[in-house]
Amino acid sequence: MTGTRARLWTVVRRELRGAVRTRTYVFLALALTGVAFGVARAGGGPSGGYVPTVVDVLLVVEVLVPTVAFAVGYRAIVDDAVRGELDVLRTYPLPTWAYVTGVYVGRAVALLAVTVVPLALLGVHVATTSGPEITVFASHRGIDSPFLYVRFLTLTALLALVSLAIALALSAVAGSGRSAILLAVAGLLLVVVGTDVALFGALDAGLASEGGLGAALALSPTSAYRGLVFETVLYVAFEGRSGFVAPILAWVSLVGWVVLSLAGATAAVEYR
Amino acid sequence: MTDPSLTAEGVTRRFGDVTALSDVTVEVPADAITALVGPNGSGKTTLLRLLVGLDSPTTGTIAYEGPSATRRLGYLPQRPTFRPGFTARETLAFYADLVDDDPDRLLERVGLDAVADRRVEALSGGMTRLLGIAQALTGDPPVVALDEPASGLDPEMSRHVFDVVDSIAADGRAVVLCSHELPLVEATADRVVVLDQGAVVATDTPAALRERTGGPLHETFSALLDRDAEPVRAQVEGGE
Image (cartoon, rainbow over all chains, first blue to last red; front, side, top):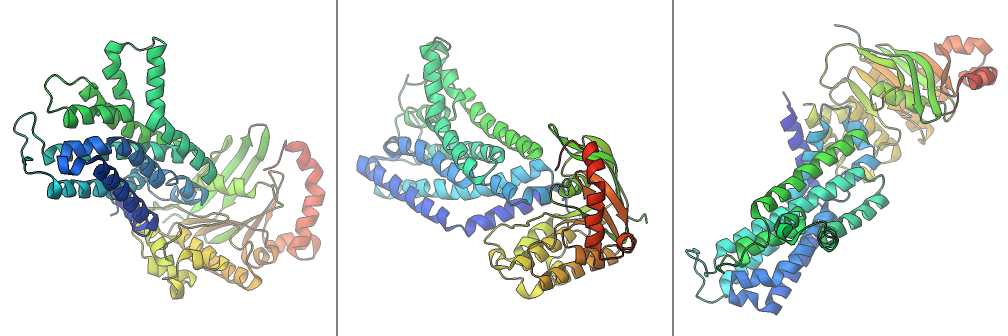
């Protein structure tokens, strides 16, 4: 008997099969690889170690990873809607949440392959080119380690997943391919700079206090990501240098963005 | 086993100030083809979407009676389009996987087994429509709804599509379709529901409708619409 979980995986498989045949993803991966390696080598990070490499590529990653995520997800649902496939799928025993989750999981696998693999290759490059002072285990503060780079990769994967979930929610709201593009651009701006600008505006207007800045920053996906990278990767080696963001709140915020965006996407598909 | 049937009882559907359907009662019985005919904007597609459950009536009820099934209703949209880059078999395999069906059986059922490995964007309009019908049959639903299954196709392909539709009803299913292809409807349908401006103008067999004017169905159709246009306009606030 085919259950809902099996049907969800059917949707995942279709997305994966589609992704494998989309050459654009290969170009995106190559572009991201080229930019990451180029920026890191220009900054000299790889010869210095993992943490200097993260410093070199952080800003680029903050912008490029959400951009790639939106490119992967902005038409995921609206295309099915425009083709009439959503109407057809409603006549199958496939709950809307299972459809949305299946699309998300399938695209997420493709997205992580496009974004995390190039950065992982950069990590391998660091391992083969950096000096001998890097040890495998960061036994105390002040030592560079591949594990710090793995933390960076994990956080970057989470930023990608958050961005994809937001892209999917906007795709579910869009009424056509054109409106999907406009919503994706607006959503991308919101993720990359919009929430930070809103936060600074709130600070300027006195709506948020500097004391609560760490908590406020955690609410923005990009700030939460950046703050966690600072807290757990870059400044883990420096005594007394913390408080860039409220870490637990930042984790909750990132996971919350994913959950709420997917819930929003499900509601939008249900009522469109 | 209960014969499958679908009934719309006193259904009205409004979109804001526009009344697309007004107090429509229609039955879609088993082992028969029920054709919804009428001019553009008469409410055919709205009624079909209500019957399938893709939309909800403002007032009135839609009721399904029949066997419990993994998929109760099969549906062919007006212009079926499939995700590009996939072959006909892969496309159907996706839907078949959702309900434990065999895509090759379905392709053979509509006569597309020879082009199973052709990408959907390379299929002709008629083949795409047949692939859509195969999709509508996926999971062996007791009721099948087809929105304009032959619109825009050449006469030979239209005839082939209607032959396939005829064979679907012969399997004991309840089939409901919208169409402007009146000669094919006349030759294939068991019951014809004539709609105009959101109301049912007549419901009968093609033969009985033909007897009203003594000519082909399209003459009866025209006569019905001319005769009933004014009273219907008085009843209905707007079109589809």
